[in-house]
Length: 412
Image 1 (cartoon, helix red, strand yellow):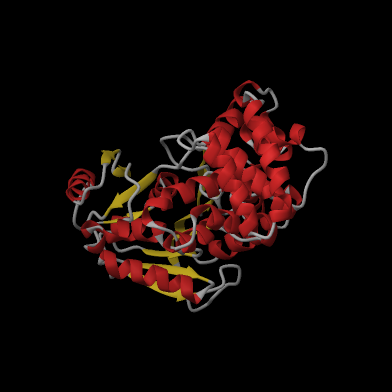
Image 2 (image 1 turned 90 degrees about the vertical axis):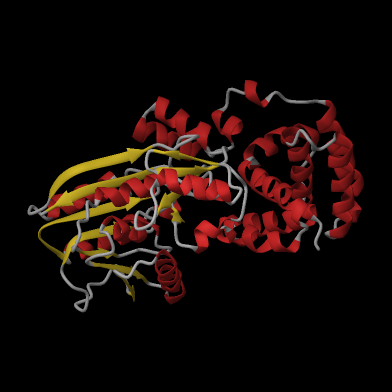
C-alpha cells in the first residue's frame, strides 16, 4: 500500500504539471492506499487543487523566491494541512511533509521546507478576512470577472461560495421498480444514510454505491439534480423516438427512457466506443430495453439515425458549472475555450436536422458562460426561423442543490 501523502503528491503534480484529470487520477489511486486512508487522500488531493491560489497567497511572505515546482507543491501540501485539516496536528503536518520531501527526490530542500512550514504555522493569516475574492475563494480573477459580467455580483458570489464545497450526490429512482421513498428505504437497509427529496434521493454517506444491493438490482442511477431537470425538460412521452447525441455516461438517457416507461426508442450516442459501452451496461443493469446505443459523431449528420420527436444536445463545454467536482477546471485559461462555441453550435445545428416537425430539442451544458450558452441558442434561433424558444434555464450551483447548468428548450 502506498502512503496517502505520497499518493496525493503524485496526483496533484500530475494535475498541475501534466494535464491529468483529478477525478480519474483519484479514482485509480484510491485502491493503492489503505481503506482507512482513502478519505484523507481525497480531502488532501482535492483540497490542495481547490485552494492553490489561497495557498500561494499564504506561502508567499515566507519565501524569498519561488522554488521549483516539486518543492512548492510540498510546501502547499504542508500548508493545506496546517490551515484546512483541523484533525492533523501541526507537528504531523510539518514532519510528514519533510519526510515526504525525501521520498520524492527533494531531500536537499528538506530544511527549507521545514523552516517555511514552521513560519507559516506561527504567523497565521485569517483567510476569511481577506477582501480579494480570488484569494478568498481560490479562483482566477478572469473567471470571477466573467461571472460578474454575465450574471451580476450577487450570483457570482453564490457561485464562488459553492466551488469549494463538497458536491451533493443524487440518486434517481428507477420508476419501473421504485419511487423516491421506496428507494430511500432500500438504501437505508443497505446502510446508506440518505433522504428522499423532490423525487430524488440525496446520499449523505461516503460509500461505494455500486456495491449496494439496490444498485445491483437496478433500482437507481446517479445523476446530478441539474442534469435530471434538463432531462425532464425534454418532456419525452411513451412511444416517442428520442436521440441523445452526447449521451455518455448515460444519466439523461436513463432518466428519459424511464420516464417513457421503457417504451419507444432512445438512441444514446457517443463518439467513443468505450463510453458507449458504459451506457449499454448501465441500461442493462436498469432493465431498460428501449435504449439503443450508437457510436456516432454528434457534429456530423448521420442519415442512419431516424427522425425524432425529441433531441437532446448536451454538448462538450468548459465545465465552469462543475468546478466543485473537478476543481482544476477553474484554472483554465478563458482564451482556451473560445473555440468551443463553434463545436457546440455544429452539434446543435446537426441535432436540429433530426427533429420531426412539431418536435422538441434541448440544448444544454454544465458551464456558466453565456458565450457557450445563450449565444449558441440565439444563433440557432436567428439562423433557423422555424424554431422558437420555449424556455431557457440557468442553474447556479448550490450547497444542497444541483451543479451549475444551462438548458434551453426549443420547438419547431
